[in-house]
Length: 506
Ligand code: HEM
Image (spheres, rainbow, N blue to C red):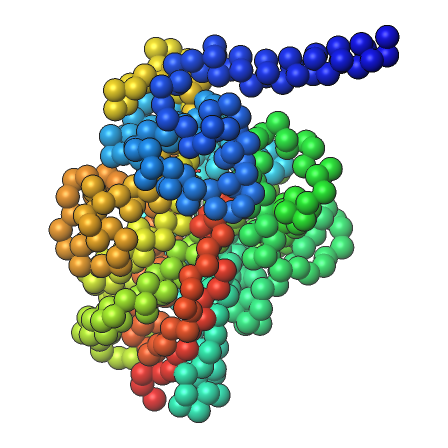
């Protein structure tokens, strides 16, 4: 009798499992059955994608699947990756109605912010409130703060160069890109840098609760771990509440990362609110405090913290990793640094003065080097997931995608498509930016495209133009990084970038 009961229980469990995986495959997503799957498991379960994210190599795995199977690949039961120019506008464009998928639920801190909210009306309201923060007029006001942080950067690097006595001073460029980008966003968002450039160290203040004690922790490290965990949990949102029970360092490090990043944000917002309006500094928080929706309502305190945190997270490691990639590829590719220095020397005649944005913003080769770095590296290399809304569905490349299907365009793959960029798509060649085809323009999406595209693009570009102009015009470099190791969480991040530098001018 007991044996029969055991058999029945096992049969029931097996039936449940088969039902759980087969019903969606055979019925719910039957329209997707003719699309080749990245692996057998990917057609039945999102565990394949989650596993690739856990190995921090999702975009590489999806890219390999596209190379084997073509432009349309099933990477989870209801998620189709489309590596084609034809998909960019329908999936991300204005007015097409696709919303962020439940992948983004893993990124919610406190409450959904501008980046993580999936609701269209809520997004429009938030975007309208922060839009004046990034207006052209506001951008002009940011330059002085970028220049102040650059002055600290140059002072620190000059000290290192002097101490190296004519030899190349050795540093991890990734670390310094992070110090610069974090100090910048601290300064722009909260009116004060984190102080990483001054200390030459990854360190920030932490506060678990608004009135709690202050401690210190490495913010860059915490953000790395948070991003990797969120990118994995986003593939299996059902796992979010159970993540803390999983006995794997990836999960508990990621959860500490989440907690830590929230605590860094809380410390900065609390400190900034205490300073109140006494300061005449117009930082992002001041602008968020001024922001009003259509009904004239201001942001509540929780929403303010959530939005300030959104800016801090979205504007720091994105810029740092993009910048590091630009440095790496410039130094790795023969002749690029020399050509760049020659062009910069013509517009920066006085090397004792920092160049202004208006002096260097139109240096064509500098822009080409930055764009080519963004293309090659693809900081957001994974496909950003969007869900087909209720209604008739969507037609792309002869496939019909019914409502509820999740679609994404893998950024790394379309940035490296030989059809779009030519046979040298995997080479760093800034000269290709002298004349782009329409397909190349469509496929270049480092800041995404459409209503959910990056709102901080102008700030990021200004920061990158100014720091690369100053670095490459003032110093000579050597690259010591033989292997370019990457970890692909939500962002594609190099592990390190060892370089040497010395002054070009005494
Ligand atoms: C090189 C640097 C940067 C890159 C490559 C980058 C890239 C991106 C991408 C690809 C998205 C879309 C994400 C998605 O749909 O999941 C995005 C969104 C966003 N970015 Fe950036 N970003 C950069 C710098 C910045 C900076 C400096 C800020 C703020 C000062 C910022 C603020 C945001 C915000 C708030 C969003 C969400 C926008 C929305 O959903 O309406 N980003 N960024």
